[in-house]
Length: 161
Image (cartoon, rainbow, N blue to C red; front, side, top):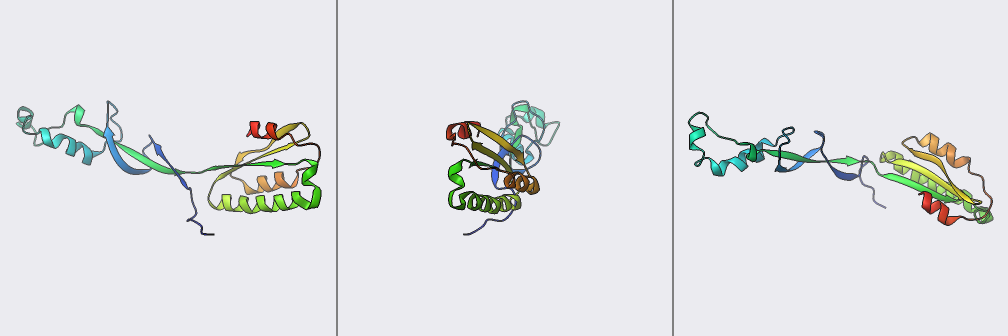
């Protein structure tokens, strides 16, 4: 199993001024976060035609030349565990094995700064035991307090997820 470096692992485009600048788009009236390099490249071909303006300035830039930055940033993933806590999980220590596997995945999610949530379904309903959080301690506490019993309302668990 190879691991990628720790940290946030999903990239998404953002309108904020934080993130890595990857390309430029026409500003369309938005004058914040201007991409100066792309704006100069957009205005350069029209400099001969703008000779009237160039008598006053060395390089003429008009509003339609403005380009804004498109940025991407890394964001955390949401890992949502949906656990069957019916009587069938009590047989042959299946619940203990499931809890061990989830604990391993929890530590991995914590190292990668992912958010973790926990849904348990048993008897006739599904319950959100742990709303999405960054706290491993809360997740461990919620995981150890899962009782086993009742039937398997799989559809309710998946619907809540």
